[in-house]
Image 1 (cartoon, rainbow, N blue to C red):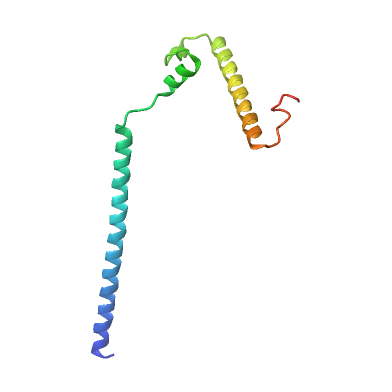
Image 2: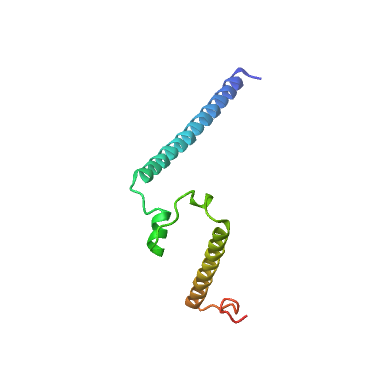
Amino acid sequence: MPWWFWILLWAALLVGAAGAVVGSGYWLVRKALRVVSDAGADLARLSAPRAASGADVLRNENGVDPPAPGSAVFADPDAMRRAYVQGRADRRTARTARRVARRAQRGQAQSLRDLGLI
């Protein structure tokens, strides 16, 4: 093989390696900038004033304060079971009412079970 072939071969290899390094560096910088941007957005979200907590929402909707955390430990198990069953029934009724309203708004057929006919 002639001597100039080796020069061309090594030049092509060096250009390819340099291109791979530049491309990888560009990809890495873009990823790093995206991470920094997301971290800045998360910090801004965390430092912003918080909205009402779940307890505040419950207090506002029902008009009563929710039970203090840990109060169920010393409560009567039968009373806790009754409260759980009642809450589950209330949630189920509310969910059914939302489904009936949504289907009525969209003009969709209603389930006979949702309407209480079965």
